[in-house]
Length: 189
Image (cartoon, rainbow, N blue to C red; front, side):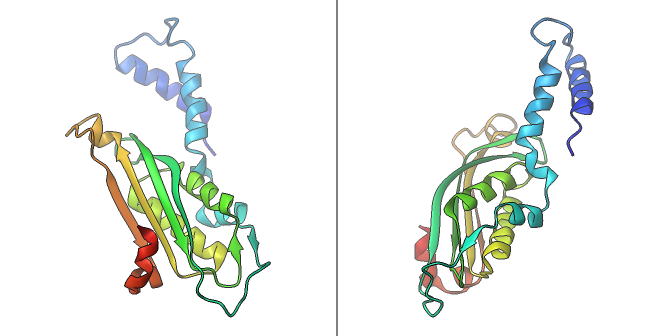
């Protein structure tokens, strides 16, 4: 679990290290605010992929013709954010596309977005986000045919260092037919 008291103490120390006075009016409650924010934006760190799959693993078989394997489910433009593990910098304006070929069950669409949201709430690299979402989707749906595409901006690139404001990073985690059969990649455009 996230230790809010420890975060408060460390943020206070950072403010002092920056040469500011943590007891001045504008900063007095900042350590507590940051601790509360970290508890929210890093909530995904409290759960394994398996636990996230259990939290958002509601599936349905109604209306599924088990013999029909021609279905593809694609959910595009899922808003999300995360934080880079190298600089603890915000990854923002992120959009995820999640696709899978149902076997005998389908997952509720809101659950796909919730999986993306919870996975994003960790310290990590963008490539890991796609991998974790795909792992969870495979566990929940039973499908090995999963694709996760993510595009986003990284403040460690746009606001510091190289400072390339319009740079976006694109990652793709392609599995099963999405990786092996070019005909399925049309669904990812």
